[in-house]
Image (cartoon, rainbow, N blue to C red; front, side, top):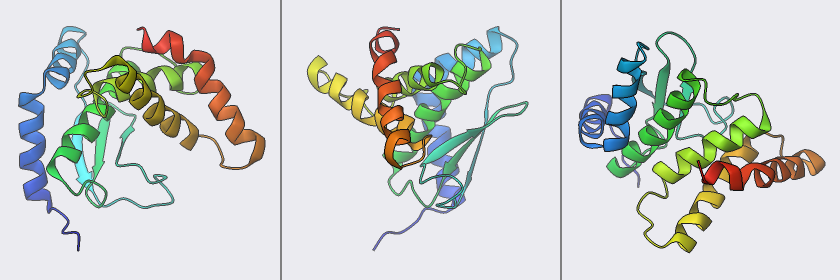
Length: 168
């Protein structure tokens, strides 16, 4: 049986992740230097259809919002990973590093997010690169409809920009 965290416990975990993670601290510092409001972080239970099964997502606005899904982050380490992943997207978006509406921009930000979040602990390059590919392909493919040629288009899109994105 999975026991979901309540928002009070979740907020403590987020505060801990926000103050102890170098990636998040660097993003917050860059936002301050660029005179951009840092992303606001909220929690809620998420809808499977609307958010496409994501553990977290960003919402544009001023300030940008990072929403972490309580019903999909069942362990405390999941919160930190989801938060880092979405903060990388927020950073890329706020600093206009890529256009999320293009295949290239989406692949770019998903590779970076996977590298700093889900795959950060991998020490051997071969395993880290496989981890990045797996997570970034899945995240990129979610943005395409899961039928026939459109799914294939998602994979082709990702692979055409992977080498460039992973080296950034």
